[in-house]
View: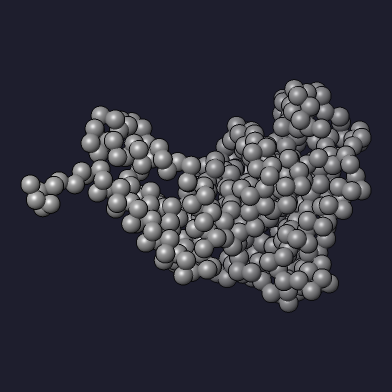
Length: 395
């Protein structure tokens, strides 16, 4: 028998192919220093699964009955495993390739942890282009009446009042402790209707040093108080703070971190920290009508790189579920963020009850924002008093 007659086992060919692919892509990756850390991080995350994946793939190539059935997740191939280990590209997810290569596609690296109605990878929260300090320090002269007038609410019926009362919650004026801290890391984020620019096609105009998301923080704080929850509202002009420190806008979370840390040091009763933001999506994605009232939709964001990720996720998941029950479609869900070019922490490592909420988008008006602030306060109150009563989580 000559050497030409020796048949090389198919499983051995696959193994050689796998090793070659891994070595090839690791070699290529080594020539791109900016991407090296991402590649190594991905390798570290997946390396524990390699022996099992390879073993199963090799055996199933010779013994098909070993592979998982069609009702379970499709098994990765040796090629896909090697490619993903070396380059962080998942053959089953085009976002892993396009997100790294196409400008503006990085938003698709975000993960939908809990999906709300209409939420997919095309309707994820979007940041406006990073504004300059000059822009965020401007204060517009807003024409009288342009900010929108608040709707006059119909008086509540006896049944409605009874339904909303919480027997274990103190009445307004009986608040003893300040448990909630509301602040705005991007305090300059505003809404076009509030600036007299309703319908303007330029989303980047929705910034202002005075008429901005702080107004929403003020409404939410007052509504929390109405529901018996003590709250402190920080109204720091973050643009001015950045200017004083000589920092650019990408360091805004570092600036707000100092503010939160100072608040904690001066008030050990604080246990919930709510950072309010505004999305840059247009009105069709950020507005919903419930019982003939128009609301600005909300979406929760959790930094996947913070040490309290799981506990913070549980808090916002509970809030999302209550919102779904009381105000269907008001919540767009929960988004997880991490990776290159993303903060990934959002100061949520400072507390196990850190909540980042995007309230509405650039086109939402004062009435819609006010309605949402009221709804959020009721939901947060229901969550808090239930947690307080059941297992003391409120404290």
